[in-house]
Length: 156
Image (cartoon, rainbow, N blue to C red; front, side):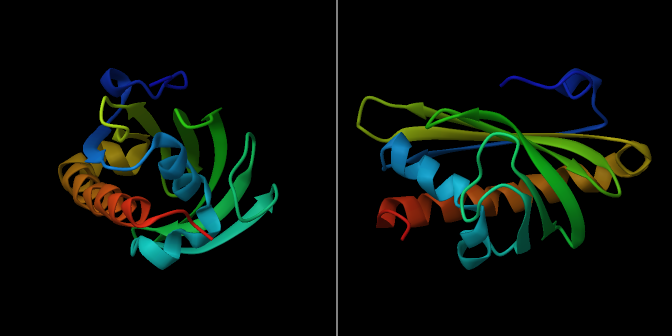
């Protein structure tokens, strides 16, 4: 994972990591992941995805979008964009965060997906004990939902 300065796991108040094997090619997983406008259809912790800068429905380098997740409305900008390999965005709102995704092909034609998030600021410093398990649970739902849709076929 290419972490932005200040968001390395050892320099962050909150760090969460989830991983899953998906029996679908990395390119298909990527298409589901960048189709942000459709996240609310398959990931229950996502709502109101609106593109501020960029062309919906897909994320691209420097796309900026507003969305609701974990009950908070945040603004994010795509920072890492390496097709079928790495995606990452920042988050600005009640806290500062970086959320990254890695997609690694495996020998079966499927892939391993890793998602990691680091958070900084007053809220993560004070509530790390609550935020970390909440992120891990929410992101586990996200990777399991991604697995389900990607193994079912391509997004429309």
